[in-house]
Image (cartoon, rainbow, N blue to C red; front, side, top):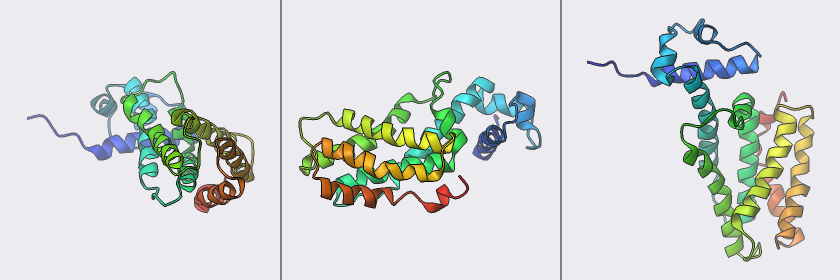
Amino acid sequence: MARMKDPAIRTLLLERAAHMLRTREPITLRSLVAGTGVSTMAVYTYFGGMDGMWKALRQEGFTRLAARFAAVPVSADPVQDLTALLASYVGNALEHPDLYRVMFDASVDLDDLAAADATLEYLVQAVRRAQDAGRFRAELGPLDLATQAWAIGHGLVSLVANGPLPPGTLDYGVPMLTAQFVGAGDQPDQSRVSVARGWEQIAPADIVGR
């Protein structure tokens, strides 16, 4: 009878690969399993080889992002909620900077492209709620607005998580998102308050040490 796969071993190898990225260690089949207590065969058993491991590592980034998005509560303020999702995106990137970098490496395929695309849907739905509430103009495309907001969060966190700028750079998120949302039809004062409240959800623990 075939042996059952142990998900803990799969997680162990993914965590090991992420650690090696963080410490800039060369990742080979042998170096990946060194010190883990498992054989090189485990890489083939759980990932089908190194190419499969890279695909799984990239997918893991989106899996953790989806879990982070799912934990963001829905309030009566959709603009605050949209901003909170973006703050959650930033927090996830700061907590997992190496996975974040691999997530957007287009040279590596994804195991489940639909699951990765579904993360953007969280933002799209928040935009739709804001339109239904009269905060954003109804004629604007929800996907376009969600993508623009994502681009702001992505640009800021890229400069901090794996880039040269200090954590204080993230503070620019409030005026930048406020400007975008006002351009989409929101009232300036109301937007500023909603964005500030949502952006506060970037956990201080995620920023410490950056």
